[in-house]
Amino acid sequence: MKKLIPWRALTLARKEIYQYLNAPAFFGAAVFFLLFCSIWLFFFQQYFVQDQATLRPYFAVFPIAFIIIIPIITMKSWAEERKTGTVELLLTMPFTEWDLVLGKFLGAFGILSAMLLLTIPLPLTLLSLGSFDAGLIFCEYLGAFLLGACAVSLGLLMSCLSKNQAGAFLGSAVILLVVMLINQVAMSFNLPHWLEQFFNFISLSYHFESFTKGLIDSRDLIFFVLGTFLFLFINTRVILFRKWK
Image (cartoon, rainbow, N blue to C red):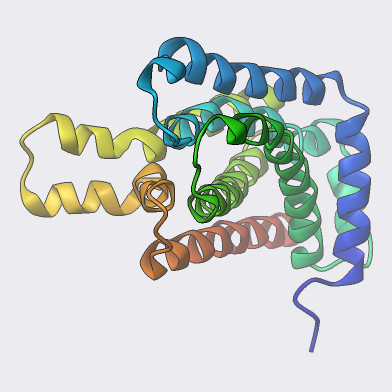
């Protein structure tokens, strides 16, 4: 029985991370992410005027930032392989579909995790200004990592289904825009209760909200884990179909 995360997948992940670190787009995306979230907190949210020891406004903008950041990270993963023809080479190597998909996922998620870790200095800087709840900040970061993992797996699936990077970026951005903000539709319109519940259920940002409140709800935790696995599983099926096509 194969291990859940084979060493071959980790080898592919290292290759992916190396390619990301040698691409200017990664550094541009990282700078944009850090600046966007900081400007949102201090300029648009007027953080110091609120006079509250909470980082909830800071983490609340992460789903919006992910709509742009994650397509930039994932658009090249499979689409570029198809464009250059190297995907055929990968499929002929002694890798399983899960090796390939997990390798791509771990590489992309590793890059996103590095971006999230780069945001830690901001909370550390603000800790001296008030009595912050360390447990709440931990929950917010946990939710951000889970949200990012699910969104990355979705972005990789869209990249696998696209023929070029532009299509992968646009497809991922549109899908993420919908699944991130569809719960706002339920809040803005007087919809039937069952439809409102459905929109909330498929909304990634809705399940992220409990973490920003300092709550680790098992339902939201399971949603992100199963959602990530589902998108990765579909990705393996797409690869298997192309391998035998």
